[in-house]
Structure formats: C-alpha cells, structure tokens
Length: 262
Image (tube, rainbow, N blue to C red; front, side, top):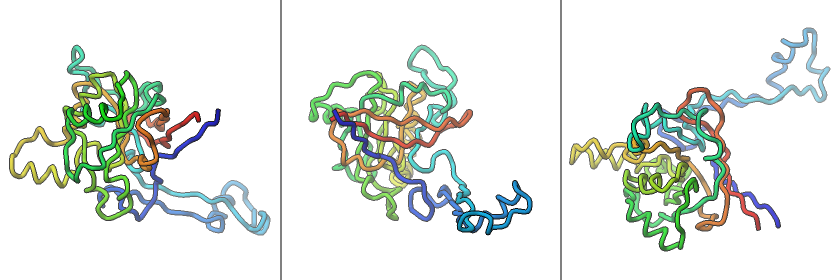
C-alpha cells in the first residue's frame, strides 16, 4: 500500500487577490545579505566575511490575520455562543479549544461547480449531491465543497466567485454529526457582493452570513480558501487540517491535505 498526499491549500502570499483589499496579507522578504546586522547583535565583532559565502539567514516579516491563507474557522468566529439547538447555549470554542480528532477524519467532496456565483446552496442541494455520489454521511466526516471559485484563486474576481452554503445546507451537515467542513471559495457563505444585492431589495438580515451563523445552533468549524479540490474523488480519502494553536483566536492557519492509501 502506498500513501499519496494531495495538497488542498493555497500559499500565503502578497500581491494576490486572495482577500478583499482591506484584508490582504503583507509579506516582507529579507534575503541572506540583509540580515547580517541581526546576527551581529548576537555575536559582537562578527564580520559578514566570517560567515560562509558572507550569507546570513533568510526570514520573512508577515502582517496577516488568522483568516488569511487556508485556515480553519472556530465556532467563536461565528458567534460568542454555540449549541443553542443542543440543549442550551455554551461559550463558543476558540481555535485552541477545537478537538484535534475533528481535524483528521474521512473526507467527502460535494461538487457544486455548476452553481453560479452568488448561489446559496440548500439542504436539498446537499442531499441530491450525496445521492448522486452514493454516500451516506457519518459523524465527524469532513465535508469539502468544490465550487467554481476554486479555479479563480489569484484572479481579480476570486472573492466574488462561486456559490456559498446557506443556513439549512450547513445544518443538514451538522445535524448528522459533521463538525468540520470546507470550501474553496473566500467564504463558506455566498460572496458578500451578491448577498448585499439581495439585502438591498428584501432588507432581510437573516441572509447575512447565514451559513456561518448556523454555528450558533450547532457548533462547527469550516475551512476556507481550499484549493485543488478538483483533484479529489467524492470519497475514499482522509483529510488532515490541524490548525495553528493561536490562543483564544477565531481561526488558525492550516496546511490542509487529502491523504490516500492506494
């Protein structure tokens, strides 16, 4: 048996349309020849020529949020409390409190690439897709949603691409024991630009962040800005998405991968 690992994460990088302008990451790259003074601060009297090839160390200074790059959102991101539908509200878990066994489970892929940008997927859509692929959900399986946004990463329209998951679609999953989901779009919900258009007409606040806010009823996590989901079959693989342990945070970065035992 051979283990095969498929990377389903995007890189953390500057100058790419991975987020709205106000949330873009900034990375300053320092080359080996730019850090000699840093090394001298530890070793007074050191000359650059004392080092092999006069080379110091390379490093990067990064200005990011916990929601840049491929990351796992904790229930705390969605609402201060969770599990209102499971016997009463409790404080929402922060990312350092998320059970690690949620983050390494069998994966299931739903192919929603045919839905247009701004479409809000429903419970019926999820049920139809599960029937199409012949899969019955099991508790703790990690459900990944492949949208049209996946191939738009880095393009100017990425943030506004693909469909999103509505409240009832999210609850369909969590009511069956799913606790981690993921999507290759910028958000688990439909792009804000489309939601704003609907809100301007109906003035219904329930449509704002409805997939996220479903975490108020049943606490769950979701991965955002996944990539390469087109390479995955409907099932038959494991997903690993352990988040960086940021104290009391709403999310943590992850190198999400799909693992196959061929």
